[in-house]
Image 1 (spheres, helix red, strand yellow):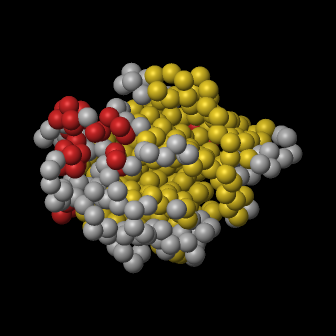
Image 2 (image 1 turned 30 degrees about the vertical axis):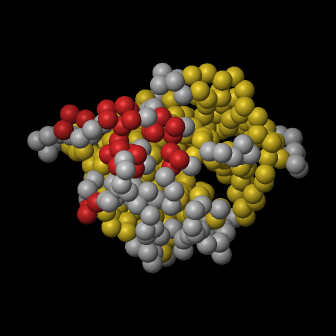
Length: 336
């Protein structure tokens, strides 16, 4: 199920304890020199605690929320944190886009200068330091399929809430003694989506490859999603241009497979071709973040419309292969 709806960017409060929702925000500076990636999760599907509970004889009786934050600059992840929280630290609205997780969260607002999301981060990072960030995703193109409802039983729902936003803000890092260690000011172009499913990820998703890039005159988003037991993946190319969203089924080609240090096999060249001869090429490049179950890249995107003129830019792509999360020894590595 696919949508682009602010109204549906709320917490859907699934009663299934294996369900999950995540709200994802990212932004790239001009030229791709800096990137910010933030995810709020009501159930952290990559959590060893969550997956140990899910693989047991009983249904997990609590939720395992988490916050993931990465600031990437000059070819490396400068600041990164994945912080799991107690269930009582999570709260979200079912009426409007608003969430709190510990001292972090986001909210939607409308003002005279425009509409968008304010994101506040307050989390710990390495060596006992603290990172605080205040960032705004001011919507340029959003709410493009507002009439589509995403809640429903036994299905994967992808809500591409705001494909393109102007992102501004700052990041502050504090030492253990409270003194300021670093301040970074950020400006770039951003993206926000929301994924929900009331099924356990590791029993549902075989692999999932997606990415997005902002060009001067368009935003391109691709997705190849394949579920376990279904050999016919969903392959889509979505183009947002002049405040209009066009969704296309595409022929999806993968080439030059390699394995990363965790053993994940992934393609280093992708090509998506629509029936009307629109083409997107993706070359995963600098690795931003990786683990046993996913890889995230700063990638090169080349988009060609029917005019035949290729457009190139940097974007973010991600390959998810959650099978390893069903392996008990990996989950016991993270035992608290």
